[in-house]
Length: 372
Image 1 (tube, one colour):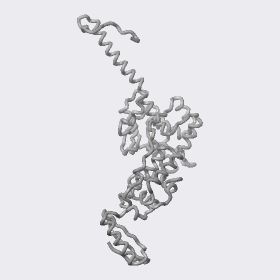
Image 2 (cartoon, rainbow, N blue to C red; image 1 turned 135 degrees about the vertical axis):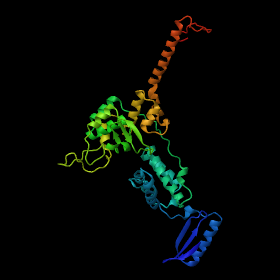
Image 3 (spheres, helix red, strand yellow; image 1 turned 60 degrees about the vertical axis):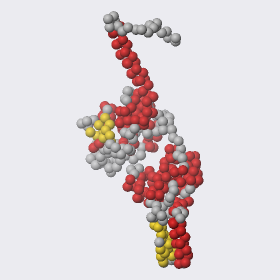
Image 4 (cartoon, helix red, strand yellow; image 1 turned 180 degrees about the vertical axis):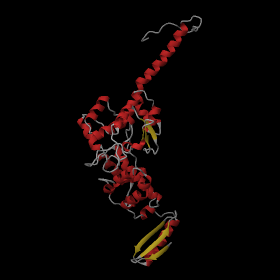
C-alpha cells in the first residue's frame, strides 16, 4: 500500500483482501491521501471494503471489454450479444452509461418490466442473460463483488410451440417464394437444419457418394450427418455450382458477362423479409422461419420415425427436446399395439385349433359383452 504523486494531485494504491489491486487518484493533497490510505487499510483488515462501491468502471467500458476479451474469442454468437448491447434500444440505451456500482436489483427489475411491454418473453430473457453474463465477467475480473441480475427471475417461456405446415401450406409457400427462397425452404423441410446451419452449407459438405449432408458446426458444437432424400437430391441437382462461391444456398449475384462466376463468396444473408412476404402472400397464419424445422420433425414423426432417430437428425443432445412431437405418433402407437394384438390372437387361435395343445383354462369363460 502506498501513495504516489501525480501531475495533478495524489494517488492511493492498495490491495484488498482478495489480492485485487485498487488505485484512487487525483486527491488534492498528500495529507488527504494519507488519511484515505489509512481508512482503506482498516476497511481491508476488517473485511469491510466494498469493491462495487469503489468501482468507477461504466457499463459502456465493461461492454467494450466484454465483447473484445470474452465474447469474440469464446462465442460464435458474439454478434448477437453486440446487438443486445449496442443495437437499437439495446442495454446501453435502456440502462444508460451507468457505473457498475449503480446497477441494482431494482433497476434490473424495472428494465425487465419495460422490456416485457415491448418484446417477447424470450427476447426479455436474452437481454437479461446478456447483462448477467457481462456482470459475471466483471466479478471474474475483480471489478465488482455481486451480480444483481442473479436475484432477478427470468420469465417463464412456452417452448412447446408446435406450429408446422400442412402439405397444402407447404406447396402454397413455395409457389409464392422467389427462387433462392424455394431452395432454402426445400432444404429446411427436408433436413430440419437450423438457419445458421443452412446458410453455411458448402458444396464440400455434400457427400454425393453417401447421399448425406455433413453439418460441421452446429449450435451444440458437434457435427452430424443428415441423409439426402430423393426430393432434396433433385433440388441439389438443379442448383448451379459456382467457380468462386462455395456456398450452396445463395442469391444470384452474377455480373454481366461473367458466365457462372459469382460476385463475392459469402453465406446467404437474412431471408426474413422475403420469407415473411411469401408467408403473407400464401395466406399462412402464425408461421415463422424456425417452424420449418418443426415441420420437418412433425412430418418425420407422423411417418413413423422414432424419437431417438429424430433427436439425432435434429442434433439435440437430449431426447427430451423431441418429446413435444410424441403426441403426433399416437396413430402409430395404436397401430403398433394392434400388431401386437394380432400376433397374440394368431398364436392363441393356432393353439386353440389343436385340441391336444389347447391350454386348460381354469377361469370363467363367459364372454364379456361390450359395455358390461
